[in-house]
Length: 376
Image (cartoon, rainbow, N blue to C red; front, side):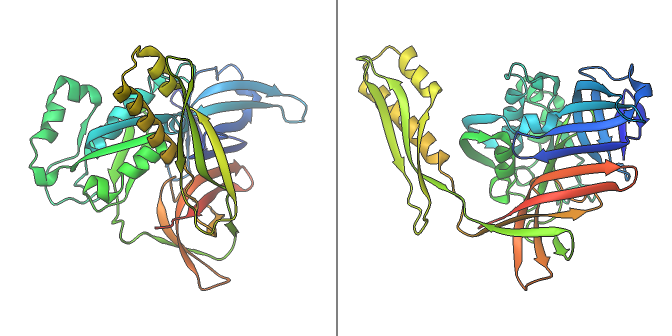
């Protein structure tokens, strides 16, 4: 495993980080000899590569410290993961377009409107059409096409190359919306064949040039199978459910509170919770729009109702979760695969939820993949 910083390579003495579809713990920590104390600075870009050259981490330095309480003094570096910060942004919108254009629009917005998180450092560019070089299979012979949101706005040649393709060769136009969902879920949902019109698995990541890559790989009808024999654990868990939402939408012109209620029936589920949510953006609509128009009030209620319905947890009783360990960077977050295990005849379809990477000079590279069963 190696660290790349300002074009130079460093072999860490030890290293660990966790990539997850949850915002916490997406942080790199590694130690190198103290000799490099003057080399690493706050805000420097750092990259982590596996032994086979796979990009594992794209981040920027947030902490530099010395550890001189050992016989072997160390320089400890910590860095935030740009990809995880970007994918864990919450977004609410409804858009009518093709899947890659929706993804590009959303990512362009989330990387420029969160003050203090440095997401504005990320430049978004995405693959606008599946490749034809064997990595991605299409029925046509045209090359990979890339275009940005700016290309769309300025109607550049890169975007026109896509526009001029036959309709049968382009992603289908859809209407997609999500309320209070992390961008990870936007990209995951928009990568499904029902939304792309392309019967392939799509993967996504942030490359060394801060370019967002999104492209098709294998057929989604035949996910790979991982046979688990050692270094794994399975767990059947029961999550608490939220099935009743009270949404406070602010006050009306008389100062009376406006609420909307939403309910979802989880038949047979023993753990039921009630959630009270205060959605400030809906409240602001009421305050900013000085009107006693009944239609406006009802429209705001409908927005609150839609938000509440989208908030419900949809975990299923007895969902399988767990983790398994490999010694190679084989999967990314969001990958779908089948697993079988040595102590039973059951097989499960799962989605990778997080990846924990550790490395030291004695043990080498270790990849622990956390997963959750996919209930269709």
